[in-house]
Image (cartoon, rainbow, N blue to C red; front, side, top):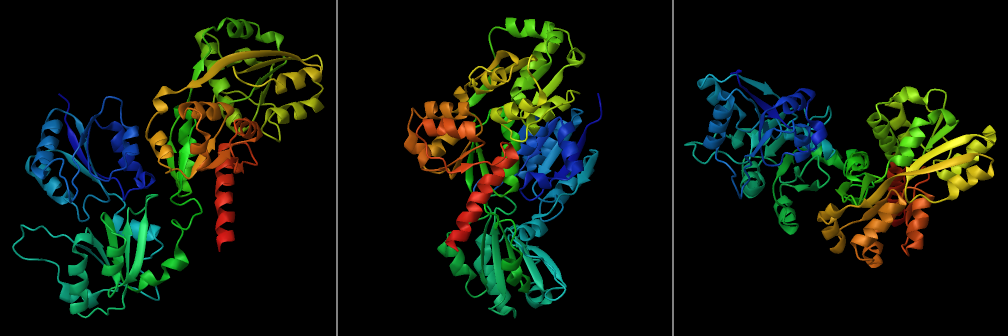
Amino acid sequence: MKSGKVYLVGAGPGDPDLITVKGLDCIKKADVIIYDYLIDETLLDSTCPDVERIYAGKSSKCHAKEQDEINQLMLEKSRQGKIVVRLKGGDPFVLGRGGEEAEFLAQHKVPFGIVPGVSSATAVPAYAGIPLTHRCLASSLAVVTGHEDPSKETRSIAWEKLAIGVDTLVVLMGVHNLTHIVEQLIKNGRSPSTPVALIRHGTKQEQQTIVGNLENIIAKASEVNFEPPAVIVVGEVVRIREQLRWFDAQPLFGKRILVTRARHQAGLLSKLLREHGALPVEMPVIRIQPTASTKKLDQAIRNLEKYHWIIFTSSNGVEVFFQRLHSLNLDACCLKGIRIGAIGPATAKALEIRGIHVDYIPAEYTGKGIASGLGGQDIAGCRILLPRSAISDRELPQTLAQLGAEVHELAIYDAILAAEAVSLGKQMLLANEIDVITFTSPSTVVNLLTLLDGRREVIDRAKVACIGPKTASKAAKAGLRIDIIAQESTIPGLVEAVEGYFQRDRKEVE
């Protein structure tokens, strides 16, 4: 039997992008993941398909597993020869029980490794725009727990020294004991006017920050029913938060944005939205499916030497085309001598990763843009293969034909209704909890309306953002109000357009 090992891995403070490279590598090779409360579960998407996932979260209201159970799990799984990752929030050795867990493993002679993580003590204030030290304001820092082990006979936090002994004080797990903490600091000499910040769900799109001072922070927290998990920062450095705010000052911060793309394509849009502070809500209303019959596509592939051009109008078309090419035991060499066109950079990238050089990308990433650009390339008499969606409109092939080309249009895939889309996204739409709905193709418009039984008023309660004129035209014909149309018909262009809309809206309010 192979030797098992346990890795105590810090997952960081909440934002999954803040995990370390080594931490992510451990997750990828794990046989067993024992993970905590507040771990962003997108980190678990990187695991092996057959990994065993065990939730061991502990919050103030619920303990999924007691510490003894967690210790025994690590012991049992490692003795079965498995690689065990104990995934903990923040850093495993900073005000968590990582030290105790490592002691237990050492006592039982279990091989283990420690992978430090980004601690919430430093990361959360940084995301709130609060530097813990500053040359003019603070030269010392202390991090303490706001919730000591109740089984300890004596308290180890020396408030009489901490109150005025350090410039900046960071308290973790202290919201429930906020009154006691404030009383101790004032009682032991800290000025009641000392600035205080409470930061909830730090580094995540739900981040909430309230600022006050020792004299009024309890009342302010009570007014908004402020609850954990949160980090408390006490000190003069809190004063410069307004000047240094960056994360929660983004135009899209906290906006709930519906992503209607197919599940396998939603990741890029969701990632970009998160990077801009938004809360993406994935509701894939379409599923890409190759057409039932491949006879015409197979025939075209076997006769590729007859074509001068192949023009791809989506990355989906590229995917389906090459799947069929490989099914026929052929490869990209079949495209030698044929000029390749792509509607935009995403489609071009899908071709390039398959080793295909793209000869033409239009300046405007639309069917109209393709035809306009090719009009200057003397395509009269050229035979053009156009593999694309079954519901594509006729404008592009008709325009190419008017330019003298012989166009062979092939419907190679369908964008069908995704039944699994009846989900959280639909519930949030019906509850008026979505700020923006993004449409990335005409089929996403049609399918969302179908899932909503044609109830346009549900969509009209949110802002509607379309990736380009074709999609916007379909939405308008369906009776929807269009608020945002991307100037560049790409996913980054769509995000930029949505951000620009709220940026202008914010300036108008100001």
